Length: 224
Image 1 (cartoon, rainbow, N blue to C red):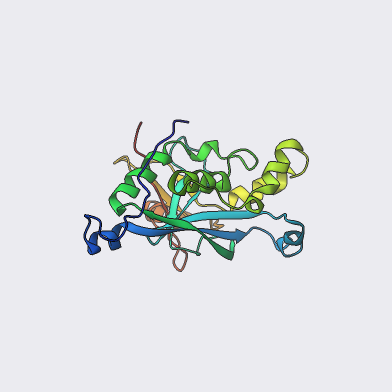
Image 2 (spheres, rainbow, N blue to C red; image 1 turned 90 degrees about the horizontal axis):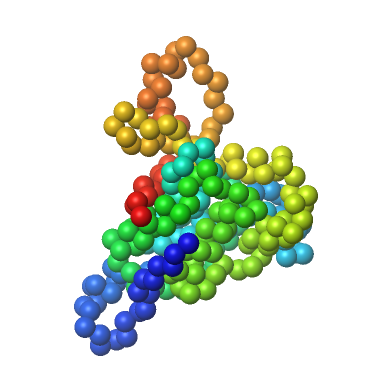
């Protein structure tokens, strides 16, 4: 994986940039952590737990989820609202000076490295993604306790049973096949039994989440 370096220094007072420019470019980088299981309430005292995390930048949260296609698994949601998980806490990671347009180009480029079909609970999960993004933006990673169980699982494959891995992955948003115009569509993973009356509205179901659910948008990757 090639390294990409982006400017993340905050200009000192008296710099050439105007105050308005600084205000629009400077942003806090925040790690939002979620519980995957109630067991975390007990395990956390031992420095362990099963967590999902997203990275919040410029008012949106970015995460990495699994699906069956060799295209971007990076998605964005409103901060602290990732569906399928229970929000636990936020961890400030630092501030950066990066315009919204530059960050968008950055995250679309990174999305090409995180395809949904490459997700793995032990070696390439959502916390590996947020740690990678945090290091590229701020120079430091996420707290060790967030992904400690995956690191332990790398040494003991029986630590996390396969049933737990499947349950965890299936809580994340799912991709659907591309439409005729080449655009990928998505829904949140809400159980639904198809009926004959659904056939006529299939395209509508693929293009929009169910009413009342949190909207999840996958990031369109930039080819390398």
